[in-house]
Length: 288
Image (cartoon, rainbow, N blue to C red; front, side, top):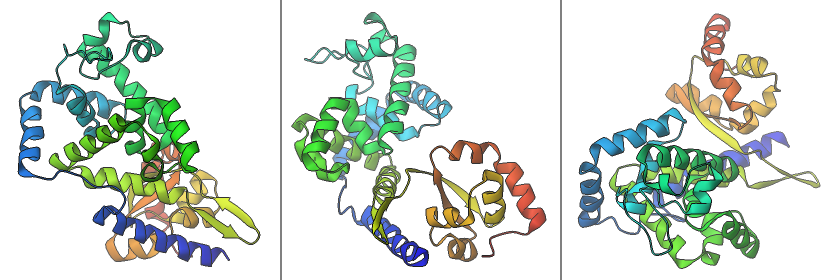
C-alpha cells in the first residue's frame, strides 16, 4: 500500500510541476513589455531602498521577491497614505502596526516599518505555508481569508479566492505580475503548488490521512538518506513518503529538492554539514 501511495504522490508532484509551468491555476495576467518596464523602472529608481528591504528579508530567511509587495503597495513611497488610512511603503494600518509594537507615527519609518512587515509576513507564512495566500492575507486580513476558505470548503487560493474582496484578488494579480517582471514568478508558483500537493488527501485502507505541511530545501547525491533519517530520528519510510522519487532524482541529476515537515527542517538545516560529512564516510546516496 505504501508503494502505491508513494507512486500516486510522485505522479501528483509531477503534475504539480506541469501546473506551475502552464499556470493552470495561477499565472501572471499581464506579461506585456510595458508592464515589465513599469515594475523594473520603479525598482531601479529605488535601488538603495530595495537592497535594504531584501537584506532584512534574507536575514529573516524570507525570499527576496517579497520586496514586490512593497512595490505594489506603495511604489516604495514612504509618505503615501491610502484612502483607508494605510501608511508607508508597506501600507500598514494602525491596528496592524500596533499589533507588532509599531506606533502610528513610525509607519513612515523605513527601517521600523520594514522590520514589522517582515515579522508579519513570516508569521503569515507559518500559518498558510504559501506566499500567494500570504499576499492575500496581508491585504484583506486573516479573518477574510478564514471566511473565504470556509465558504469554498477549501484552503487552496485558486478555489477560495472568488469569495475574497475584488481589491484583494486584484492585489494578488499585481503581485504575480510584478514577480513575472522580476523573473521570480516560477518560484512563487512552485511554492504554491508544493503547498497544494502537501494538502492532498490519500486513501490508506479505510482511513484518510493527510500529509504534513512540508518545507523545502535542496540536497545533492552526497547525502545518504539513511543517515538523514538516523540523525533526525525518523523512520526511513517517512523520508521516502515525504520525498517520493528522490532516489531516482539523486541518481539521475545528482541533486533534488528535499522536503521535511516544518518542525523538522530547522534541525536538519542546523546539522546539514554534519549529516553530509557522515554520509560521505558511510557512502553517498540511498540504498533501500
